[in-house]
Image (cartoon, rainbow, N blue to C red; front, side):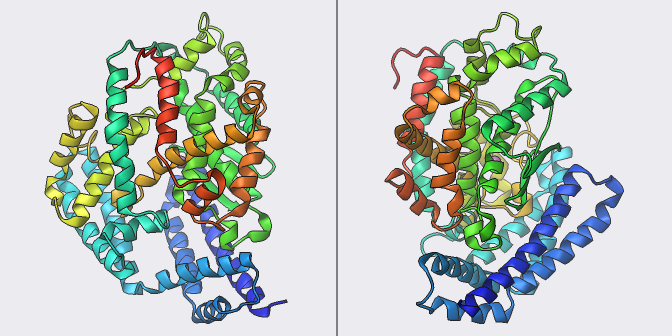
Length: 501
Ligand code: CO
Protein backbone atom coordinates (compact mmCIF):
# COMPACT_ATOMS: atom_id res chain seq x y z
CA UNK A 1 0.00 0.00 0.00
CA UNK A 2 1.28 3.45 -0.93
CA UNK A 3 1.01 5.41 2.31
CA UNK A 4 1.33 8.79 0.57
CA UNK A 5 -1.56 7.96 -1.73
CA UNK A 6 -3.69 6.75 1.21
CA UNK A 7 -2.95 9.96 3.10
CA UNK A 8 -3.89 12.01 -0.01
CA UNK A 9 -7.20 10.12 -0.26
CA UNK A 10 -7.91 10.76 3.43
CA UNK A 11 -7.20 14.50 3.09
CA UNK A 12 -9.37 14.83 -0.02
CA UNK A 13 -12.15 12.86 1.67
CA UNK A 14 -12.16 15.35 4.55
CA UNK A 15 -12.26 18.34 2.19
CA UNK A 16 -15.19 16.69 0.41
CA UNK A 17 -16.99 16.14 3.74
CA UNK A 18 -16.79 19.87 4.46
CA UNK A 19 -17.91 21.01 1.01
CA UNK A 20 -20.77 18.52 0.79
CA UNK A 21 -21.93 19.58 4.26
CA UNK A 22 -22.07 23.09 2.78
CA UNK A 23 -24.05 21.70 -0.17
CA UNK A 24 -26.64 20.24 2.24
CA UNK A 25 -27.03 23.67 3.86
CA UNK A 26 -27.38 25.34 0.44
CA UNK A 27 -29.97 22.78 -0.68
CA UNK A 28 -31.90 23.36 2.53
CA UNK A 29 -31.68 27.13 2.01
CA UNK A 30 -33.37 26.84 -1.40
CA UNK A 31 -35.91 24.16 -0.53
CA UNK A 32 -36.86 24.17 3.17
CA UNK A 33 -35.40 27.06 5.17
CA UNK A 34 -37.75 29.66 6.69
CA UNK A 35 -36.83 33.17 5.50
CA UNK A 36 -35.68 34.40 8.93
CA UNK A 37 -32.90 31.80 8.87
CA UNK A 38 -31.08 33.55 6.03
CA UNK A 39 -28.63 35.62 8.09
CA UNK A 40 -27.16 32.80 10.17
CA UNK A 41 -27.22 30.44 7.22
CA UNK A 42 -25.04 32.82 5.18
CA UNK A 43 -22.56 32.89 8.08
CA UNK A 44 -22.53 29.09 8.44
CA UNK A 45 -21.92 28.67 4.72
CA UNK A 46 -19.09 31.23 4.75
CA UNK A 47 -17.43 29.44 7.69
CA UNK A 48 -17.55 26.09 5.92
CA UNK A 49 -16.24 27.63 2.68
CA UNK A 50 -13.36 29.15 4.65
CA UNK A 51 -12.43 25.81 6.27
CA UNK A 52 -12.64 24.05 2.93
CA UNK A 53 -10.39 26.67 1.29
CA UNK A 54 -7.89 26.44 4.14
CA UNK A 55 -7.70 22.65 3.93
CA UNK A 56 -7.46 22.57 0.16
CA UNK A 57 -4.54 25.02 0.13
CA UNK A 58 -2.76 23.42 3.09
CA UNK A 59 1.03 22.98 2.79
CA UNK A 60 0.94 19.30 3.75
CA UNK A 61 -1.40 18.56 0.86
CA UNK A 62 0.88 20.53 -1.48
CA UNK A 63 3.99 18.55 -0.43
CA UNK A 64 2.13 15.28 -0.74
CA UNK A 65 0.89 16.12 -4.24
CA UNK A 66 4.39 17.15 -5.39
CA UNK A 67 5.84 13.84 -4.15
CA UNK A 68 3.02 11.74 -5.60
CA UNK A 69 3.35 13.51 -8.94
CA UNK A 70 6.86 12.05 -9.23
CA UNK A 71 5.87 8.62 -7.92
CA UNK A 72 6.21 6.11 -10.76
CA UNK A 73 4.67 3.27 -8.78
CA UNK A 74 1.15 4.73 -9.03
CA UNK A 75 -1.40 3.20 -11.40
CA UNK A 76 -2.60 5.18 -14.43
CA UNK A 77 -5.85 6.07 -12.64
CA UNK A 78 -4.03 7.19 -9.50
CA UNK A 79 -1.66 9.33 -11.56
CA UNK A 80 -4.60 11.07 -13.24
CA UNK A 81 -6.19 11.81 -9.88
CA UNK A 82 -2.96 13.29 -8.59
CA UNK A 83 -2.42 15.41 -11.73
CA UNK A 84 -5.90 16.90 -11.56
CA UNK A 85 -5.64 17.55 -7.82
CA UNK A 86 -2.23 19.18 -8.27
CA UNK A 87 -3.56 21.51 -10.98
CA UNK A 88 -6.50 22.51 -8.74
CA UNK A 89 -4.14 23.02 -5.80
CA UNK A 90 -1.73 25.18 -7.76
CA UNK A 91 -4.56 27.32 -9.10
CA UNK A 92 -6.06 27.86 -5.67
CA UNK A 93 -2.64 28.81 -4.30
CA UNK A 94 -2.30 31.59 -6.85
CA UNK A 95 -4.99 33.62 -5.10
CA UNK A 96 -4.26 35.59 -1.96
CA UNK A 97 -6.84 35.58 0.82
CA UNK A 98 -7.13 39.32 0.23
CA UNK A 99 -8.10 38.82 -3.42
CA UNK A 100 -10.69 36.16 -2.57
CA UNK A 101 -12.28 38.37 0.08
CA UNK A 102 -12.36 41.37 -2.30
CA UNK A 103 -14.00 39.22 -4.97
CA UNK A 104 -16.53 37.80 -2.48
CA UNK A 105 -17.49 41.28 -1.39
CA UNK A 106 -17.76 42.52 -4.98
CA UNK A 107 -20.02 39.62 -5.92
CA UNK A 108 -22.34 40.04 -2.97
CA UNK A 109 -22.59 43.79 -3.69
CA UNK A 110 -22.92 43.02 -7.39
CA UNK A 111 -25.80 40.62 -6.75
CA UNK A 112 -27.70 43.17 -4.66
CA UNK A 113 -27.16 45.93 -7.23
CA UNK A 114 -28.27 43.63 -10.04
CA UNK A 115 -31.48 42.72 -8.17
CA UNK A 116 -32.36 46.39 -7.65
CA UNK A 117 -31.38 47.34 -11.20
CA UNK A 118 -33.53 44.54 -12.62
CA UNK A 119 -36.50 45.45 -10.43
CA UNK A 120 -36.21 49.12 -11.37
CA UNK A 121 -35.36 48.38 -14.98
CA UNK A 122 -32.26 50.55 -14.83
CA UNK A 123 -28.87 49.24 -15.98
CA UNK A 124 -27.13 52.36 -14.62
CA UNK A 125 -27.68 51.06 -11.06
CA UNK A 126 -25.69 47.91 -11.87
CA UNK A 127 -23.04 49.59 -14.02
CA UNK A 128 -20.45 50.62 -11.34
CA UNK A 129 -20.60 47.17 -9.67
CA UNK A 130 -20.22 45.41 -13.00
CA UNK A 131 -17.25 47.68 -13.74
CA UNK A 132 -15.65 46.61 -10.46
CA UNK A 133 -16.34 42.91 -11.09
CA UNK A 134 -14.88 43.16 -14.55
CA UNK A 135 -11.73 44.77 -13.23
CA UNK A 136 -11.35 41.91 -10.71
CA UNK A 137 -11.98 39.32 -13.41
CA UNK A 138 -9.27 40.90 -15.57
CA UNK A 139 -6.92 40.59 -12.60
CA UNK A 140 -8.01 37.00 -12.16
CA UNK A 141 -7.06 36.26 -15.79
CA UNK A 142 -3.58 37.68 -15.15
CA UNK A 143 -3.22 35.70 -11.91
CA UNK A 144 -4.26 32.44 -13.58
CA UNK A 145 -2.32 33.09 -16.79
CA UNK A 146 -3.25 32.34 -20.44
CA UNK A 147 -1.60 31.92 -23.82
CA UNK A 148 -3.81 33.65 -26.41
CA UNK A 149 -6.71 35.50 -24.87
CA UNK A 150 -7.45 36.58 -21.27
CA UNK A 151 -10.93 35.02 -21.58
CA UNK A 152 -9.23 31.59 -21.96
CA UNK A 153 -8.31 31.69 -18.27
CA UNK A 154 -11.97 32.11 -17.25
CA UNK A 155 -13.38 29.53 -19.68
CA UNK A 156 -10.81 27.02 -18.45
CA UNK A 157 -12.28 27.13 -14.96
CA UNK A 158 -15.62 25.78 -16.18
CA UNK A 159 -14.51 23.82 -19.24
CA UNK A 160 -10.85 22.81 -18.86
CA UNK A 161 -9.04 22.75 -22.19
CA UNK A 162 -11.61 24.85 -24.09
CA UNK A 163 -10.43 28.20 -25.45
CA UNK A 164 -11.90 31.44 -26.74
CA UNK A 165 -10.78 30.45 -30.22
CA UNK A 166 -12.46 27.04 -30.22
CA UNK A 167 -15.72 28.48 -28.87
CA UNK A 168 -15.63 31.35 -31.38
CA UNK A 169 -15.32 28.74 -34.13
CA UNK A 170 -18.42 26.89 -32.89
CA UNK A 171 -20.38 30.12 -32.88
CA UNK A 172 -19.22 30.93 -36.41
CA UNK A 173 -21.01 27.73 -37.39
CA UNK A 174 -24.08 28.79 -35.42
CA UNK A 175 -24.09 32.11 -37.28
CA UNK A 176 -23.56 30.58 -40.70
CA UNK A 177 -25.88 27.58 -40.41
CA UNK A 178 -28.32 27.86 -37.56
CA UNK A 179 -29.28 31.52 -38.04
CA UNK A 180 -30.47 31.00 -41.68
CA UNK A 181 -32.20 27.72 -40.74
CA UNK A 182 -34.21 29.43 -38.00
CA UNK A 183 -35.15 32.20 -40.49
CA UNK A 184 -36.49 29.49 -42.79
CA UNK A 185 -38.57 28.04 -39.94
CA UNK A 186 -39.83 31.50 -38.93
CA UNK A 187 -41.16 31.98 -42.47
CA UNK A 188 -43.24 28.80 -42.34
CA UNK A 189 -46.60 28.01 -40.71
CA UNK A 190 -46.48 27.92 -36.90
CA UNK A 191 -47.81 24.91 -34.98
CA UNK A 192 -50.44 25.19 -32.27
CA UNK A 193 -49.24 24.85 -28.67
CA UNK A 194 -52.16 26.47 -26.84
CA UNK A 195 -53.17 23.20 -25.11
CA UNK A 196 -49.86 23.21 -23.20
CA UNK A 197 -51.04 26.34 -21.39
CA UNK A 198 -54.45 25.20 -20.15
CA UNK A 199 -55.01 24.55 -16.46
CA UNK A 200 -52.99 21.50 -15.36
CA UNK A 201 -53.61 20.25 -11.82
CA UNK A 202 -50.31 20.66 -9.95
CA UNK A 203 -50.56 17.42 -7.92
CA UNK A 204 -51.11 15.38 -11.08
CA UNK A 205 -48.22 17.18 -12.80
CA UNK A 206 -46.00 16.31 -9.85
CA UNK A 207 -46.96 12.61 -10.10
CA UNK A 208 -46.30 12.57 -13.82
CA UNK A 209 -42.87 14.14 -13.26
CA UNK A 210 -41.94 11.45 -10.73
CA UNK A 211 -43.01 8.77 -13.22
CA UNK A 212 -40.81 10.29 -15.90
CA UNK A 213 -37.84 10.36 -13.53
CA UNK A 214 -38.41 6.69 -12.66
CA UNK A 215 -38.58 5.82 -16.32
CA UNK A 216 -35.26 7.57 -16.92
CA UNK A 217 -33.70 5.37 -14.23
CA UNK A 218 -33.31 8.01 -11.51
CA UNK A 219 -32.83 6.12 -8.23
CA UNK A 220 -35.21 7.38 -5.54
CA UNK A 221 -33.34 5.41 -2.89
CA UNK A 222 -30.31 7.57 -3.71
CA UNK A 223 -32.14 10.84 -4.22
CA UNK A 224 -35.37 12.79 -4.03
CA UNK A 225 -37.21 15.54 -5.85
CA UNK A 226 -38.47 18.71 -4.19
CA UNK A 227 -39.87 22.06 -5.24
CA UNK A 228 -37.80 25.23 -5.58
CA UNK A 229 -38.25 28.51 -7.43
CA UNK A 230 -35.19 27.84 -9.62
CA UNK A 231 -34.82 24.16 -10.49
CA UNK A 232 -31.38 22.70 -9.75
CA UNK A 233 -29.47 19.50 -8.99
CA UNK A 234 -27.07 19.04 -6.12
CA UNK A 235 -25.11 16.06 -4.90
CA UNK A 236 -23.84 15.19 -1.42
CA UNK A 237 -22.34 11.91 -2.70
CA UNK A 238 -23.41 9.47 -5.47
CA UNK A 239 -25.87 7.81 -3.06
CA UNK A 240 -27.66 11.05 -2.22
CA UNK A 241 -28.34 13.27 -5.22
CA UNK A 242 -31.16 15.84 -5.02
CA UNK A 243 -33.14 17.35 -7.85
CA UNK A 244 -35.72 20.12 -7.73
CA UNK A 245 -38.39 21.30 -10.11
CA UNK A 246 -41.13 23.93 -10.25
CA UNK A 247 -44.74 23.49 -11.21
CA UNK A 248 -46.81 26.08 -13.02
CA UNK A 249 -50.53 25.33 -13.03
CA UNK A 250 -50.98 27.24 -16.30
CA UNK A 251 -48.01 25.99 -18.27
CA UNK A 252 -47.28 22.29 -18.42
CA UNK A 253 -43.87 22.96 -20.02
CA UNK A 254 -42.20 24.30 -16.87
CA UNK A 255 -42.45 21.19 -14.71
CA UNK A 256 -41.89 18.78 -17.55
CA UNK A 257 -38.65 20.22 -18.93
CA UNK A 258 -37.10 21.15 -15.59
CA UNK A 259 -37.85 17.69 -14.31
CA UNK A 260 -36.25 15.87 -17.25
CA UNK A 261 -33.34 18.33 -17.44
CA UNK A 262 -32.45 18.08 -13.75
CA UNK A 263 -33.07 14.33 -13.90
CA UNK A 264 -30.33 14.12 -16.55
CA UNK A 265 -27.93 16.02 -14.27
CA UNK A 266 -28.98 13.75 -11.40
CA UNK A 267 -28.29 10.55 -13.34
CA UNK A 268 -24.74 11.74 -14.04
CA UNK A 269 -24.11 12.36 -10.33
CA UNK A 270 -25.72 9.04 -9.31
CA UNK A 271 -23.51 7.31 -11.88
CA UNK A 272 -20.22 8.42 -10.30
CA UNK A 273 -18.59 5.64 -8.29
CA UNK A 274 -18.90 5.88 -4.47
CA UNK A 275 -15.37 4.44 -4.05
CA UNK A 276 -14.03 7.59 -5.74
CA UNK A 277 -15.69 9.94 -3.24
CA UNK A 278 -13.65 13.12 -2.82
CA UNK A 279 -11.22 12.27 -5.65
CA UNK A 280 -11.25 13.82 -9.13
CA UNK A 281 -12.37 10.42 -10.44
CA UNK A 282 -15.49 10.90 -8.32
CA UNK A 283 -16.37 14.26 -9.85
CA UNK A 284 -18.05 15.38 -13.06
CA UNK A 285 -15.67 16.41 -15.87
CA UNK A 286 -16.88 19.91 -16.56
CA UNK A 287 -19.99 22.06 -16.74
CA UNK A 288 -20.26 21.40 -20.48
CA UNK A 289 -20.27 17.63 -20.04
CA UNK A 290 -22.67 17.95 -17.11
CA UNK A 291 -24.97 19.99 -19.29
CA UNK A 292 -24.61 17.43 -22.10
CA UNK A 293 -26.24 14.86 -19.81
CA UNK A 294 -29.19 17.09 -18.93
CA UNK A 295 -29.69 18.24 -22.53
CA UNK A 296 -29.42 14.73 -23.93
CA UNK A 297 -32.34 13.60 -21.76
CA UNK A 298 -34.28 16.81 -22.16
CA UNK A 299 -33.92 17.32 -25.91
CA UNK A 300 -32.64 14.23 -27.66
CA UNK A 301 -34.87 11.92 -25.62
CA UNK A 302 -37.62 14.04 -24.03
CA UNK A 303 -38.47 16.25 -27.00
CA UNK A 304 -38.52 13.39 -29.48
CA UNK A 305 -41.38 11.34 -30.79
CA UNK A 306 -40.44 7.84 -29.51
CA UNK A 307 -40.49 9.04 -25.89
CA UNK A 308 -44.01 10.40 -26.31
CA UNK A 309 -45.24 7.30 -28.09
CA UNK A 310 -44.47 5.59 -24.77
CA UNK A 311 -45.95 8.30 -22.56
CA UNK A 312 -48.63 10.33 -24.29
CA UNK A 313 -51.53 7.97 -23.52
CA UNK A 314 -50.71 8.11 -19.80
CA UNK A 315 -50.61 11.88 -19.95
CA UNK A 316 -53.88 12.03 -21.86
CA UNK A 317 -55.51 9.81 -19.23
CA UNK A 318 -54.35 12.21 -16.50
CA UNK A 319 -55.57 15.33 -18.32
CA UNK A 320 -58.38 14.16 -20.60
CA UNK A 321 -60.14 17.52 -20.87
CA UNK A 322 -56.92 19.40 -21.85
CA UNK A 323 -55.71 16.88 -24.39
CA UNK A 324 -58.96 15.76 -25.94
CA UNK A 325 -58.55 15.45 -29.69
CA UNK A 326 -54.78 16.12 -29.46
CA UNK A 327 -52.69 13.47 -31.19
CA UNK A 328 -49.21 12.41 -30.12
CA UNK A 329 -47.95 14.19 -33.22
CA UNK A 330 -49.72 17.43 -32.32
CA UNK A 331 -48.18 17.18 -28.86
CA UNK A 332 -44.74 16.54 -30.29
CA UNK A 333 -45.03 19.58 -32.59
CA UNK A 334 -46.32 21.77 -29.77
CA UNK A 335 -43.37 21.05 -27.51
CA UNK A 336 -40.98 21.84 -30.34
CA UNK A 337 -42.19 25.25 -31.35
CA UNK A 338 -39.31 27.39 -32.60
CA UNK A 339 -39.81 31.09 -32.12
CA UNK A 340 -37.26 33.88 -31.48
CA UNK A 341 -37.91 35.36 -28.05
CA UNK A 342 -36.37 37.73 -25.52
CA UNK A 343 -35.70 35.52 -22.51
CA UNK A 344 -32.96 32.89 -22.64
CA UNK A 345 -34.49 30.49 -20.12
CA UNK A 346 -37.75 30.31 -22.10
CA UNK A 347 -36.08 29.82 -25.47
CA UNK A 348 -36.55 26.76 -27.70
CA UNK A 349 -33.61 24.43 -28.27
CA UNK A 350 -32.51 26.18 -31.51
CA UNK A 351 -32.78 29.91 -30.82
CA UNK A 352 -31.35 29.19 -27.35
CA UNK A 353 -27.87 29.23 -28.85
CA UNK A 354 -28.30 32.75 -30.20
CA UNK A 355 -28.81 33.92 -26.63
CA UNK A 356 -25.57 32.23 -25.61
CA UNK A 357 -23.67 33.51 -28.63
CA UNK A 358 -24.65 37.08 -27.69
CA UNK A 359 -23.44 36.67 -24.10
CA UNK A 360 -20.19 35.15 -25.35
CA UNK A 361 -19.61 38.08 -27.70
CA UNK A 362 -20.38 40.62 -24.96
CA UNK A 363 -18.06 38.92 -22.44
CA UNK A 364 -15.24 38.65 -24.94
CA UNK A 365 -15.61 42.27 -26.02
CA UNK A 366 -15.68 43.48 -22.41
CA UNK A 367 -12.57 41.56 -21.41
CA UNK A 368 -10.66 42.74 -24.47
CA UNK A 369 -11.81 46.26 -23.78
CA UNK A 370 -13.31 46.65 -27.25
CA UNK A 371 -16.53 47.85 -25.61
CA UNK A 372 -17.02 49.65 -22.30
CA UNK A 373 -19.46 48.66 -19.56
CA UNK A 374 -21.74 51.64 -20.33
CA UNK A 375 -22.05 50.49 -23.94
CA UNK A 376 -23.27 47.00 -23.01
CA UNK A 377 -27.06 47.60 -23.28
CA UNK A 378 -26.75 49.16 -26.73
CA UNK A 379 -24.40 46.42 -27.95
CA UNK A 380 -26.73 43.76 -26.49
CA UNK A 381 -29.83 45.22 -28.14
CA UNK A 382 -28.15 45.46 -31.55
CA UNK A 383 -27.14 41.79 -31.34
CA UNK A 384 -30.72 40.73 -30.49
CA UNK A 385 -31.88 42.58 -33.56
CA UNK A 386 -29.18 41.01 -35.71
CA UNK A 387 -29.50 37.34 -34.66
CA UNK A 388 -33.05 37.05 -33.38
CA UNK A 389 -34.69 39.85 -35.34
CA UNK A 390 -36.35 41.30 -32.24
CA UNK A 391 -36.33 44.65 -30.48
CA UNK A 392 -35.44 44.61 -26.81
CA UNK A 393 -38.01 46.83 -25.04
CA UNK A 394 -36.07 47.38 -21.79
CA UNK A 395 -33.03 46.33 -19.74
CA UNK A 396 -35.01 44.02 -17.43
CA UNK A 397 -35.94 41.86 -20.39
CA UNK A 398 -32.58 42.50 -21.99
CA UNK A 399 -29.14 42.80 -20.52
CA UNK A 400 -30.33 42.45 -16.90
CA UNK A 401 -32.28 39.19 -17.33
CA UNK A 402 -29.56 36.79 -16.10
CA UNK A 403 -27.91 36.63 -12.69
CA UNK A 404 -24.50 35.21 -13.79
CA UNK A 405 -22.47 38.41 -14.24
CA UNK A 406 -23.53 39.69 -10.83
CA UNK A 407 -21.91 36.53 -9.37
CA UNK A 408 -18.77 37.19 -11.42
CA UNK A 409 -19.64 34.20 -13.62
CA UNK A 410 -17.87 35.25 -16.83
CA UNK A 411 -17.01 32.30 -19.07
CA UNK A 412 -19.92 30.23 -17.73
CA UNK A 413 -22.53 30.81 -20.47
CA UNK A 414 -20.71 29.02 -23.33
CA UNK A 415 -20.94 25.74 -21.40
CA UNK A 416 -24.72 25.73 -21.97
CA UNK A 417 -24.26 25.60 -25.73
CA UNK A 418 -21.38 23.15 -25.45
CA UNK A 419 -23.77 20.90 -23.52
CA UNK A 420 -26.26 20.71 -26.39
CA UNK A 421 -23.54 20.22 -29.00
CA UNK A 422 -21.90 17.43 -26.99
CA UNK A 423 -25.33 15.89 -26.38
CA UNK A 424 -26.09 15.71 -30.12
CA UNK A 425 -22.74 14.06 -30.85
CA UNK A 426 -23.01 11.59 -27.95
CA UNK A 427 -26.58 10.68 -28.79
CA UNK A 428 -25.68 10.08 -32.46
CA UNK A 429 -22.98 7.69 -31.23
CA UNK A 430 -25.38 5.92 -28.85
CA UNK A 431 -27.80 5.40 -31.76
CA UNK A 432 -24.98 3.92 -33.82
CA UNK A 433 -23.92 1.51 -31.09
CA UNK A 434 -27.36 0.57 -29.76
CA UNK A 435 -29.31 -0.71 -32.73
CA UNK A 436 -32.73 -0.63 -31.04
CA UNK A 437 -32.24 2.46 -28.94
CA UNK A 438 -35.29 4.41 -30.08
CA UNK A 439 -37.48 1.31 -30.42
CA UNK A 440 -36.76 0.62 -26.73
CA UNK A 441 -37.46 4.23 -25.74
CA UNK A 442 -40.76 3.90 -27.60
CA UNK A 443 -41.57 0.98 -25.30
CA UNK A 444 -40.75 3.11 -22.25
CA UNK A 445 -37.42 1.39 -21.74
CA UNK A 446 -34.49 3.77 -21.40
CA UNK A 447 -32.26 1.26 -19.58
CA UNK A 448 -30.03 0.54 -22.60
CA UNK A 449 -29.33 4.27 -23.00
CA UNK A 450 -28.62 4.79 -19.31
CA UNK A 451 -26.27 1.78 -19.19
CA UNK A 452 -24.43 3.14 -22.21
CA UNK A 453 -24.05 6.59 -20.60
CA UNK A 454 -22.93 5.00 -17.34
CA UNK A 455 -20.30 2.86 -19.02
CA UNK A 456 -19.01 5.48 -21.47
CA UNK A 457 -19.23 8.64 -19.36
CA UNK A 458 -20.50 8.53 -15.78
CA UNK A 459 -18.27 5.97 -14.07
CA UNK A 460 -15.05 7.59 -15.30
CA UNK A 461 -15.55 10.88 -13.46
CA UNK A 462 -12.73 13.26 -14.32
CA UNK A 463 -10.41 10.62 -15.75
CA UNK A 464 -10.63 12.38 -19.14
CA UNK A 465 -10.87 16.03 -20.06
CA UNK A 466 -14.02 16.83 -22.03
CA UNK A 467 -12.14 16.74 -25.33
CA UNK A 468 -10.49 13.40 -24.50
CA UNK A 469 -13.85 11.96 -23.51
CA UNK A 470 -15.45 13.14 -26.72
CA UNK A 471 -12.71 11.49 -28.78
CA UNK A 472 -12.74 8.31 -26.67
CA UNK A 473 -16.51 7.89 -27.00
CA UNK A 474 -17.26 9.22 -30.48
CA UNK A 475 -13.91 8.94 -32.26
CA UNK A 476 -13.60 12.67 -32.92
CA UNK A 477 -13.43 16.07 -31.25
CA UNK A 478 -16.55 18.16 -30.71
CA UNK A 479 -18.12 18.71 -34.11
CA UNK A 480 -21.02 21.13 -34.60
CA UNK A 481 -22.31 19.15 -37.62
CA UNK A 482 -23.96 16.60 -35.30
CA UNK A 483 -26.13 19.26 -33.74
CA UNK A 484 -26.97 20.79 -37.11
CA UNK A 485 -27.88 17.38 -38.60
CA UNK A 486 -30.11 16.64 -35.63
CA UNK A 487 -31.76 20.06 -35.92
CA UNK A 488 -32.33 19.80 -39.66
CA UNK A 489 -33.73 16.30 -39.54
CA UNK A 490 -36.09 17.00 -36.67
CA UNK A 491 -37.32 20.48 -37.55
CA UNK A 492 -37.63 20.07 -41.32
CA UNK A 493 -40.20 17.38 -40.60
CA UNK A 494 -41.95 19.35 -37.82
CA UNK A 495 -42.23 22.44 -40.03
CA UNK A 496 -42.68 20.50 -43.28
CA UNK A 497 -39.82 22.36 -44.93
CA UNK A 498 -39.52 21.32 -48.56
CA UNK A 499 -35.94 22.28 -49.16
CA UNK A 500 -33.59 22.67 -46.25
CA UNK A 501 -30.89 25.27 -46.81
CO1 CO B 1 -28.42 22.35 -16.59
